[in-house]
Length: 207
Image (cartoon, rainbow, N blue to C red; front, side, top):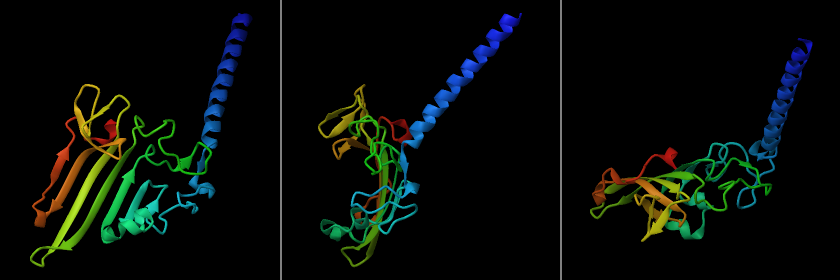
């Protein structure tokens, strides 16, 4: 009876040690990543990344942008014709993470994947603005699009991504991505509502 009790105690202790080791391993991996809170991470232009919205409109911790279209490109010269366009973007961790786990002190993109293909990355882009119509009227417009990274088993044919079963995912954009939904409203141009939806799947969680 004592031997059986001793074996049970030893087994429990071994399970506890293994469990603690696994927890420690997971904790170590998490701690290996550098967060925005550390103050050590930098943006693509070398400026430090801080919590909250920066001067350009990026909130990397919240994975979103809100500002002018040209602000998203650091007010680049080529972007000036679109300076009056308002832009809001949201993305997931695979698109741009809010931490650095590969040690380059920059926010990770498609972490664990060589490219965005198959990473599950997605982005939403909401633009709006106004312009003068042919008769001098003010034309207000807005545009919304969902963009996803193409799955690893997808194929690109004639500018359109298709899933492994040959079902259309959506038009190709930026080579590695597909548009899965477009909504556009512009009364002056005769555009109202949904302009495109993926025959495969228009849900961001499905990729």
